[in-house]
Length: 282
Figure 1: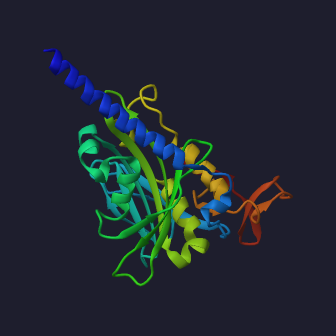
Figure 2 (figure 1 turned 180 degrees about the horizontal axis):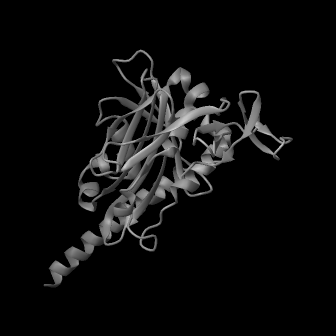
């Protein structure tokens, strides 16, 4: 009887050591996110029209410029993929829980970083080079990456912005929520901001089932994440209070501090200037 208890205890302790070593290793490799320059891209648009896109089941939505379409959605309402019709850019969202048994036995899922590598490489189909993880002031992790596709002459570049929490009662389990933005390598500097903004605009209802109540799991609100990184990219939302038209605006070039109705964003409407309301319509 004592031997069985000791073996069970030993197995439990090994699991604890295993998870702790992963967490310490991940923490030691992370640097601080300190500058928007680390994103390698910035918004260069002006009064760029955007629109809301909703998945067929209505569980997920995103905001994107003309030319973006939804390319895939999970029936569970926990994932959404979008691409530009010319396939030059991708934006995606995934929220999933990994059971401890799977994480312990399968190297592809043994840690959040391994899971990201597996997801980006499409199960090993593509070669993925991960950069140095950066932790921002919100507690999110920014992970740059590059993808080599043997069938594609133009290679991919992007970032994953993600958060992770442990699962109470499941020693090796974890929940990961990740936003992915990708362009062709040569487009990242000029258009990466667009892909990031689209990814961070995604909202899916499944997090309520995956993460449970706020008192149970630590989860950084999607709105806070989007607002922070939109600020880093140099863009804001503004909308027409009349017809509901939605825009990405550039605070440094589009804002009029001397408008007839006070400081703000003014859109030309015929011979007049119409002041827009700030923020997303939702």
